[in-house]
Image (cartoon, helix red, strand yellow):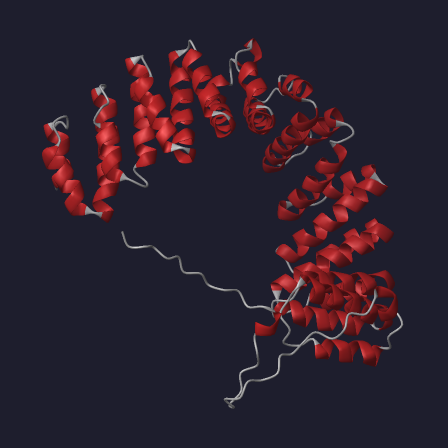
Length: 424
């Protein structure tokens, strides 16, 4: 038997690093990084020396060593000339450089002249450089004077510039004076209000989730109430699942309550899928079980599909069982289709097997439509058989119409009306 040989692509060594292309055919010397100064040595460099060192680094490949050197040099420049350092870093970021450079320079400038720094940053052409600078400037500014920083946001361009600045201010504002931060957030509207609320809820809910929830429910914006309660649910259930779920029952608005429970259980199922599944069997879960069982079983199946399948099969409510089985089947087929196929084929209950087979075959069709169509053909329920085959073959026709047509013509289980429709 002919020996198979693997081909390898060798990575360049330091001696093989990219060289500058010139018109000469002679090899060009490799441009090496200047010796790395210690942080203490860099703090003693003059501004011309810093600029010369950065100029020497032009054209070097980015590595951990060069990134560290560049960061120290820009920090030194920012101490000597924050405006010049910020302009240099903004240009670097606009050309694909490390945003940390701009954060370092913007922070230094904001410590002495935050208003001037923010006015400059707002005019940057690169949205990435602009928002990077504004985020750092307003974070630094609000740590010194949150109310003053908050009042300056309205002068920024609408869009991401304002939301980035608002997010930066809100966390520091809430840490310094929660009541004042809440009053400020209540006076906002639209995306900036949502941005401020996200930061405040994230901070406040860690110490007083009940009070956070009460404040959220008092807000006039329905979008804010919905989004903030979902955020609160995820934060709260991470610390105390029982208290979070109990709190949900106190929310009088059905839509908000359902949204809270949905978010809480999605997070809960990721943290502890077994406990989340057990909760679904409680009386408190009964109104929400239908909308939650699929997500809980799917997350459990990501960790332990066999146990999740056993639990799904044990559900006595047929509708819940079918949703859980379908979800487990889809998840399992994504991670280990061979094991999933073995499980699907071994399910003793015909209806349960049909449900799992339908979900498995549709998921399998993404990679192997021919095999998926054969699996779907095993479904005994006519309606489920039609639905599955129609979906699989319709998609199959888009990528391999001849193979799909051949299957339709040879199928012994496909109803005549479906065959005629798929052959069109």
